[in-house]
Image (cartoon, rainbow, N blue to C red; front, side):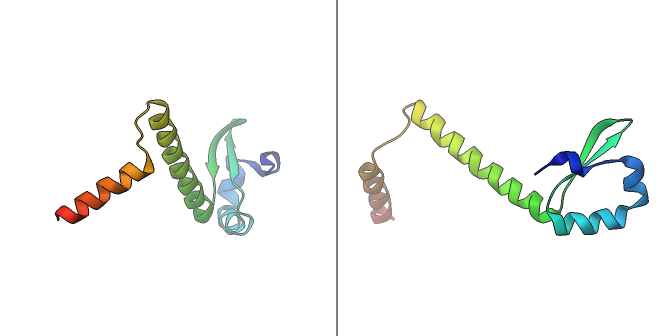
Length: 91
């Protein structure tokens, strides 16, 4: 993904909003909007946004798992199954 081809000034956004929204859905690439020559906003279609949020959630889960391993807060799988079986039998 080359963001350099997806940079537009805010005046372009104002003049071409409907076209931009249509193109974002087709291309799936984000659009950087500048104001006074500085990047200010990133626009993207909803599907790409949702996909990115799911990816971030998975990465957070992996990071939490790694942290628990580093903190030695893990148990062997066989012990975990024993705990689950005991809880299930007691209910």
